[in-house]
Image (cartoon, rainbow, N blue to C red; front, top):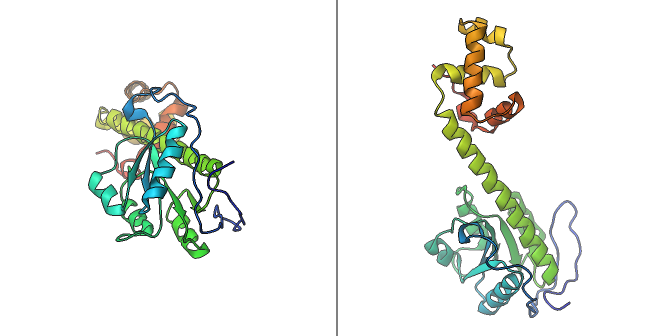
Length: 249
């Protein structure tokens, strides 16, 4: 198969692939997915950052050929000036570029909770650089040339990671919004139920009757949209730590 052909050696304990330095020509495949399968806001988008225009174009054609949107940038600054789109996807990033390096960009994006997963693709990588990138959160580190399928598999995995992260973030946001609808007493009961306390124990600690505890617990489950105690506990555990640690007055 044409593309980024490989001669690989594995690095123990990492996803690093050591490859020759020269990049080969990518041969786009036929598109296998409908480009109108999902609304734009939900369609995955791969952001390609590489200072070599030929490489950018080849990567973009490969990504587009399997029905995934792609946008290209010649530098980290171009990407930052354009802003990160609010779409699932990943960042395909060269390491060495004029101005800010790929590792610099990774460090800058680390504080952004909405930043997409990063795949490094470089012709100048080494093991220490790969270890640094992976420890900082990169999902993969590939060295040019790399086989088309290897790259596409990495992109697919990274997009899956981002979709899962976004779903989790949305769920947490929903839990926080629902938590805001609880009264102070309901929050107290919510905390106690989530910590495995029995109704009579909660009643004793709060100085109320078991009947009142049961009423509050029902209200909490309804407002938190939990169909079972198990779901209620999972909703509690999904809340940010500061919210779980803060005691209701």
